[in-house]
Image (cartoon, rainbow, N blue to C red):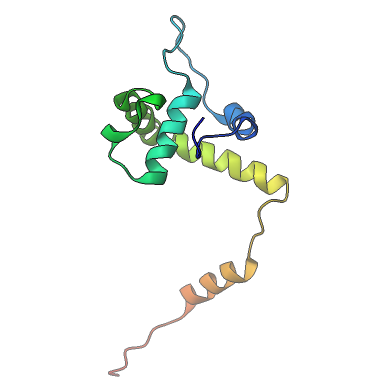
Length: 115
């Protein structure tokens, strides 16, 4: 396990919110956890996809999972579920003043200084 890889505790939180595979048949060659660690490695370091270390699986497989989930909205769903879990546990502090400021700023009329 690399320095930035998911811990067992983090994986137990993340795994239930991930989509379940629907295809029956041969099990996957690369575990999903390893591929997700590869995606996280790439996001953390900014290396090109082809430079993702082989320990995470073939770069093309890591990229394929990332891109498929990006296109079908899975990443957004996972983020939303994790955010709601954290919110119910009280781990997110919502700053109401910030929202109020944005709302008030949207209502401000800008006058043309030339008039």
